[in-house]
Each structure stands twice: as C-alpha cells, then as structure tokens.
Image: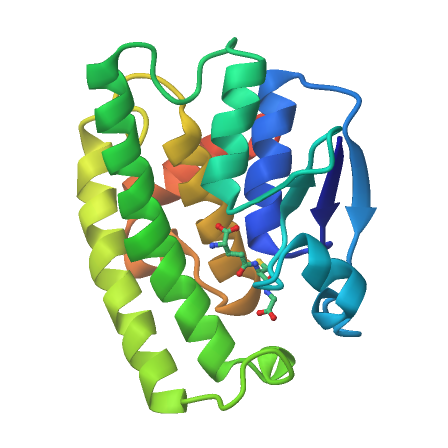
Length: 204
Ligand SMILES: N[C@@H](CCC(=O)N[C@@H](CS)C(=O)NCC(=O)O)C(=O)O
C-alpha cells in the first residue's frame, strides 16, 4: 500500500500517528508537494479528484481518501490495539468524540489558519480574514469546553486513548505551530496538560 502525505500537513499526520499507534509497518509513504501544487496535477487528481492528502492506495489500485475512512480501513486490517471502539456502543461514542474534534476543533483551527496565515494564501483563495478570525474565536469556545471535559476524564472519548485523541492532538499541534495557540497561556491548564501528555507518546 502507498500513503500519500505531505510534511507538516495535519490531516496526513492524523493517519501517520494512527499507523504508529497500531504498529503497522510496510506502508510506503509518498510525499506530495502542496506548495508546488503537485496535488492538483493530473497524476494525483486521478487518485483523489478532490486533491487532498492523505490518500491511501490499496494494493489492488483502489484509493481511499478522508483521514477517518483511511483509519477505519487500517483498524479493520489490524484490529489491535483498538482505537475506534470494540462494541457498537463504544464505536458510536468514540465516533461522536472524534467528529466533535474533527468538525469543531480541527475544522475551526484549519479555517482560521487557512484564512489568516500568509503561508496558506496560495492554497486558500480568496482568503477571508474576518471569517478566519471569527473561526479562531469559535475554536476558543470549543477549547474551553474541552479543557473542562478533560478535567474529569483522561482522554477525549473517556478512559482510554482513541482516534479522537489523535484528531485532537493533531489539531492542537497545527494551532500551536501556525496560530501560536498554547492552551496554558489562555488559562486552559487541563488542555495544556493533556496536550503535553499526548506529546510524550512515541507516535506523536
Ligand atoms: N477531509 C479530508 C481533508 C484533507 C485535506 O484538506 N488535506 C489538506 C492537508 S492537511 C490538503 O490536502 N490541502 C490541500 C489544499 O488545500 O489544496 C481528510 O479528512 O483527510
């Protein structure tokens, strides 16, 4: 299998962290140069018509995109350690937590960065600065909720590490790098401690 990634891009990082947590080996990583618009060239568009990374090319030639879908495939391929839930109930609650992280935390961070950071100008045209800043404010509301949530539980989805923690961590790292967002500086000490704890995992 081949995994199309891009250095420093947060969505591919979700999948590579998932792979590292699983201990899966043997997937060839191919770097796609987003700055050079390689993902919009014919060869890549043939694999993923929506031009995003990551994408996983299976041995039979089919291509999976969407980070969560790729993780679902890998979880099926190698069920242990379980990161997406064992029973239907657990899967539902982990999916809820993961989608909250993806849509409300990762999404607002990505929109903020894409619409305000000069380095993303080439990828996000047109940039809407006001929209970007308002997304940054919305991210703070979610971060405050998450901070309180983590005061009472070890991980985003409850008592154990799951895919929802990977999504949250990759979002927080993206924000740390390009929004200079450090939860502790906003008084979000539980979120900061959580981020620092996840950062110690070898997969991070
Ligand atoms: N929903 C997709 C998002 C993929 C995505 O947007 N990836 C970014 C990199 S983190 C990308 O390829 N951006 C290229 C662009 O904006 O042109 C997923 O979950 O994988």
